[in-house]
Amino acid sequence: MKFFIDTANLAHIKEAHDLGILDGVTTNPSLMAKEGIKGTQATLDHYKAICEIVDGDISAEVLSTDFDSMVEEGETLAALHPNIVVKVPMIKDGLKAIKYFSDKGIKTNCTLVFSAGQAILAAKAGATYVSPFLGRVDDIGWDGVQLIEQIANIYAIQGYETQILAASIRSSLHIVKCAEAGAHVCTCPLEPILGLLTHPLTASGLAKFVADAEKMKEIMQEQE
Ligand code: G3P
Image 1: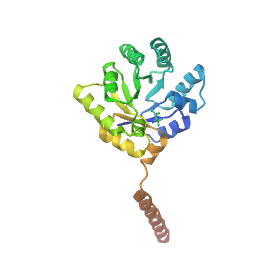
Image 2 (image 1 turned 90 degrees about the vertical axis):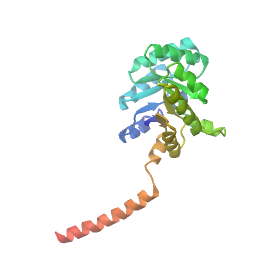
Image 3 (image 1 turned 120 degrees about the horizontal axis):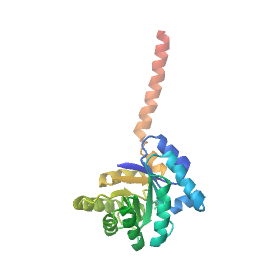
Image 4 (image 1 turned 135 degrees about the vertical axis):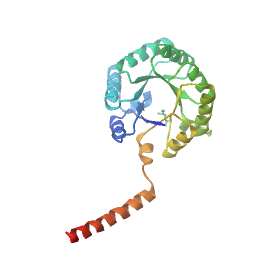
């Protein structure tokens, strides 16, 4: 499973990249607004800055909701860098735009997906990625991980090539569950990624090793 970071924060992107396990980045208008990015030029410049940090797929979302404007925006975004993936919402015009981009060889990420039916449509339109929002599915009392599993089964049976990009991940456990459920990619903020590193037995085991290493140094110094 590939790891993408779901943020527009350059410091977080750099920190995840420096871990050596980052495969890409996803953003959305809410994440861009959170970083104070406003206006076309600032938005394009920010995507270019992300592309300079990470050599992997970078999802940049269109802001419009009608076909013509989504196509115009998506073509501008795609021209920025070969790693840009145009992120398009799962609506009727969005589906048409995904088909249009797919026919032109432009990579797409179909976002705001909450059902297996929507995931089938995204695959049929030729989306590179489909983004089921598992945390938001959990929020309404359904089972987000089960949705990932269902989509993974359908895609395997049907031979769809669209990659399942599990999104709206809120915890380290979500990441592990997505790997088990067959997601090709998980995208999440920095914290759940860093959370995977920690375990109380690692911390207590290391404390003991460090203490014993000090004793070893003393012995070695005595022998010198
Ligand atoms: O990738 C989608 C993600 O940004 C949404 O996450 O936590 O707002 O549901 P969340």
